[in-house]
Structures are given as C-alpha cells and as structure tokens.
Image (cartoon, helix red, strand yellow):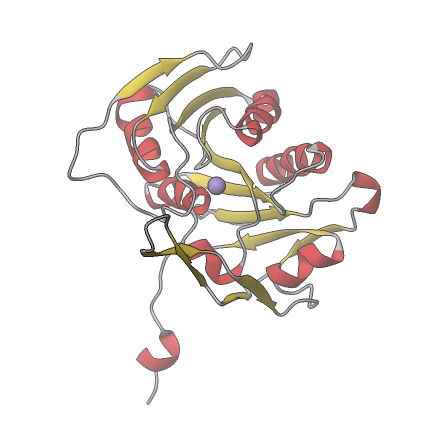
Length: 248
Ligand code: MN
C-alpha cells in the first residue's frame, strides 16, 4: 500500500513524525508537507505565486519526503501529479497539534489535506490531538494503528471515504474507546483581542474563548473527546442544504 502523509503544522512537526512512523507499518510512505506552518489555512490553494518543492531528509525515517511552499491541499495535488509515481492508496493528514472539531473543520488545513485526497478519489483520514501542550502521543499512536487496520480490514463501503479523527490528550489508561460521531459546533466568544502597538496604533489578534456545543454528548465530536473517546467523523464535501432544496 502506498500512503501519502501531509499536515498543516509544517514538515518538521512532531505530529507528522508520529504519523509517518505509525503509517510505515502499513506500506510505503511518502511525505509532501508545507515547509512552514499553515494552520487555519482551510482548503486554500496557491494560484498567484509559484510553488517550490524541496527534497527533505526526515530524521532517520527512510521515507521519500518533500517540503512544499504551499498549503496542505497544494501538497496533495502536487504529490499525486509529480512526486509519487505509483497509485496512492491512502492519504493521511496530521497529527495536528490541537483538535479539529465541529464547525472549526472549515478553517482546518489538516482536514483540508485529507479532503483534497478524498476529492481526487483516494481514501483519506485527518488526525488531530486535543490541546496545544501534548504530553504524550501514546494514545495517538494506538488510534492511528487501529483506525488504519480497521479501514483496511473492514471497509464497509465500496465508496471512497473521508474521516476526521480527534484524539483526546489523555494517557491510554483513560481511553474509553472509539465513537463514530457527527460534527458539533465550536463558537468563539470575544473572538478578537484589541491591543496597541508601541506607537499607540490599534491592532487585532484572533483568539477568544471557545464554547463546544454540545459539550458532553458523545454522539457529537465536540462531546466525545471530552468523555475520553477517540472521535471518528465520516465527512462529505457536498454542502448542499437538502432540507431547503427538497422542501415542497
Ligand atoms: Mn495545525
């Protein structure tokens, strides 16, 4: 099996290393990831500037790796057309530092990397771990292994699949299992901070306190990770509002 790995935290992020190490057990891994962090770039693509590609050596990992001056979506497109001369069977994106839950996935470069794989007809999975201070990747490693093997062994559909996986930042002893979930909502209060530069000019910085809705219902991704589950949300890219479309 040929596996393409990308991310939005940049090619040298710890989470990408973890994902590559675990994915290597399942086949030949290729890395095409942004040279710089592209978090929150959404499904952006680069159309107004040239994109350069650099061959990289990633630690002691024996994988063909490319750093790309572009977004995760660029990386997957370029890898398919130029960098991997075999059929790509699986696209993996992550492991992102920070959860990608509910409405936030619209902004996520990590999810976009996987979504691009899905759009071009490849089974794809995005992995994110909750929290910005990640104490251990032990549960993430377990989840990557078990989700990839389940996908390979027990694929329940003949259609191409896209999964968004969120892993709680807890030790494996506290892990409750896997939950198939639907997307919740993430709402930010006091989104922008207004501050002043040394010359008295206002500037604005995106931040704010996040509210997850629902917070405790494990049928939703936003609730599942709070209850110790690894959340697996099957995604689609068809944003059609069928409720309105089909209204008589
Ligand atoms: Mn990121």
